[in-house]
Amino acid sequence: MGFSTTHLIIFLVIIIVIFGTKKLRNIGSDLGGAVKGFKDGMKDGTDKPADAPAAATQQVASSASAAKETIDVEAKTKA
Image (cartoon, rainbow, N blue to C red; front, side):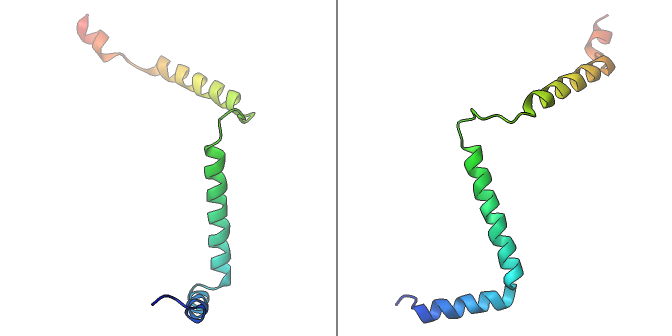
């Protein structure tokens, strides 16, 4: 007792009527983008984007400025 071709066609027609072709197209493109992103993430990591060194430099600079503003509470209590 499986699905026949007629059952599948009726099911697809009902899905198209409920969601509409535009929403189904968007879902398909989102799913494709997710699969592509997953495959890119699973790569070896040898291909690094060109923006990575610039982003790392900005992060180090922002953490250095944050360190200047940080107050060491333990140092005040020990003295």
